[in-house]
Image: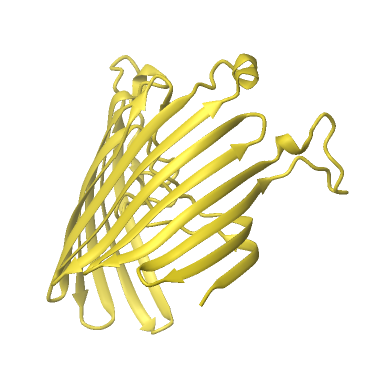
Amino acid sequence: GHQLHVGLIPVNPWGTVFGDAAGEAYRIRYDIPTDYGTIIGIIQKGTEATNTDGTKTANMTESDDKDAYYLLYVGKLGNVNLYPGFKYADNGNESTGFVGILGVKGEFGNIGFESEAMVVDTDYNSAYTAADPTKLDSRTYGAYLNVWNVSGNITAGALGAYGSSDSKGSFGFGGDFDAGGAKILGYDDTIEGALLGAFYADYDIGDKLTIGGYAGLVKYHREDTTTQWDGAKAWELSADAAYKITDNLVYDCGAGIAQLKWGDSSANEPDRAYR
């Protein structure tokens, strides 16, 4: 039936983890079941321009509060799950934003996949832009596809992700996105304005032990920051192992090596990263 959720609620990824970052926010959420899926409406309170005693911060009004509004849908078409969504953000007197999302997940026999496409549009208020000329209206795009095959004890897959970039902004892959299982790429800093390709595989050795490997390459085409990022490349090779001690306790370990090469040949190359 209909469900109402009110309070401090986790901001979980919508569709896939691509373009998302975990967090919590005060929300009013209402779920409406239908014969064709579930419609979800959310009112979210981001930040409020108030002091700890509840009074407004000096020179601040209600218009400085930051709120967001979501309209989401969960549906199913055969073996495919659909997750379209829209978000409107009122960032006080700074800007307004619109995000459109279409997430897809499905399975066909031994083959599984997930995909997501996003558009992020940000419009800054003229007064805010005048105070900070680096804040420019922008519209960025991102897309992600991950396909895998399960054959016996082996799961092998390939994925690709893209984020647009121009002089006004770059699309970020999100803090939750681990580039398909990377240990280093995107771990300490969100990948932005780039093209990613990766291969991975996991092998179950008996009921308790699983080992895996990962290889990924990122090529940046950023135009909104220093020139060394435009044409920069990064690669990673990593491996991991997981041992199930009990059904509720798993020991997981892994290691990786990565290298970043700047697009500007005059810049000093960073050292290789190990984890």
